[in-house]
Image (tube, rainbow, N blue to C red):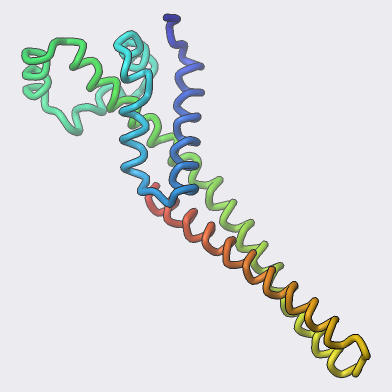
Length: 180
């Protein structure tokens, strides 16, 4: 196995953050659960070879102390060996690094929400325009009025579905942002 470089590590941290966000947005999952499961299943945690590299590249090498006292870690070493203690240290360091990467991505998510909200506003304006056109068609007493009105109503119904989907995505993104 090749050694993990500093650059590879932080590219991987950012990729994990992207995966976690995508999972949370796609499946409306609870971010802390997805974060834990993703880190727990990461090859860098599964394979002992990577633990020293994680610990050397991170600035969060003591993140495990939020969950383990030195006495607890001593028991882990006594019961399961030093490799298990290094895995615990690497797990919590990687988890904290990914948390920090997620935090940095919060601004991007907020920008996505703003863009989606603008799109919803544009779609609502389109609906208003269609409704005005329907009024004009009714007033014109055209021979094709029923056909024209039905077409506009179909456009409105399709646009309302788009708005519903956009608002659902906005809600999901806002949930993820709150969890960050």
